[in-house]
Length: 574
Image 1 (cartoon, rainbow, N blue to C red):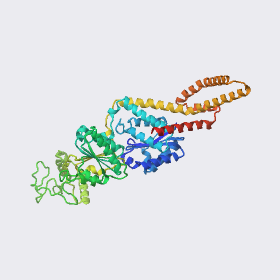
Image 2: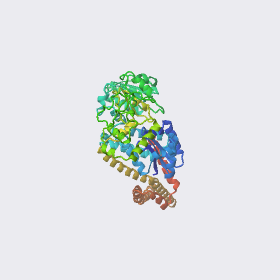
Image 3: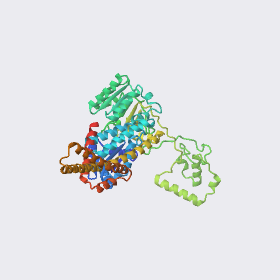
Image 4: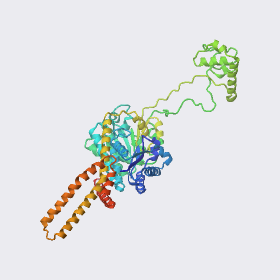
């Protein structure tokens, strides 16, 4: 077994890189075809989700395989190899098996324990089988990963630790409350009709939304999903009313929507910030400030606000003696008040402005050299800026309150469907893959996770043993075939020497010789399979071929025949 996986995920790469590296369905197909056409790889499968892109392959050389798979990922994702390489991870042989089994159990998911990944692994296997890029190794690997994932969910409470990404996303809008209470009676728009969008629609329906509008570029798929939701409502499973609309109707539907979930395969934005702004126009209080923008007094240019006039020297406890200053209309906090003062007095004034205390006796003991240094610094500042900086405490900034959201946007697409700038709009709350990653980083892990990890470890060991044992099976089959040929040859020879031998005696002799050969081969072949299943047991197949002088091509022919039969069975099951 020379299983190799090269990939990147939410654990190794920022969302911005994952967005750019996301593979369309056509790109995945081309990547699979190019991988098996490459020299080091004989099998290939791609697992691409909203937060991971992984290329699995059976390779004959490790270093050449890593280089080739990394290059192919870069070429088909459109991200340069130099930029992509720091975010790639590599797993080989047993570590690669452990990785996929962990992924299948939800241990590597953004939301630990979520079960949606099982459907995505099944789709990845079906695509590889359809394109004939999955052979014995990847068929066995992915099918066993599905069984391990199902075992983890049935034998442990991992479901209590995790949930679907859709549910986790909706929980970000509920302020700690139940999704059902938050969603009840709301109008929802679901953009896309794929597996994630279908899951989102089903989740919203179960949560109690009043209406779901499904939009998709292929209208028939949107209509099919809406029909499924309607049938569920007719059966009494939900109370939702569902209908399908073309993508062109999304802007008008947004004006009536309370929540939008989008997950398409589009390479560009599906909803721009302008479209979202138009949808919430008139639904939030007029004059509401956009988050992050200061609507207070405009201070552009050199215009400075005029300070209120005060009487000379009337500010309580001010250390400055100002009777000699002529003219009114200035503040003792301002630059006019400090012009021409010596350094010690300026320091006292600064401390007074900052509500500090200054020991005037200490200030009075300042040396002329120190005063000269401070005065020179002030003079230099005046020469550059034309004024001495005003020493006043900054006024506190009052944040404009944001209104309650009237439109909740959940973007589960990679790359993103909804313009990130939409989150700055008043009355809009946007949750995307990036914010979900931040939220899930602090999510507590259930105690059952340890049980799942033990299951994964046991299953990895069992899978490795089975693969090593399977590696020697063609050699054992070829050995038994050779033994059968020897028996047939000797029986034919015996018939030539004893032409008068009747059928009953011939049959008895033939059966006796076969039993002797089977008994002689039984113990060695069983034992060699056991030894081959142990770590480091790959050499036993070579030893068997050498000891019995087995033809390498005969062994390879047995292996190819087994692969062809297994692939046919796998295609039938898929």
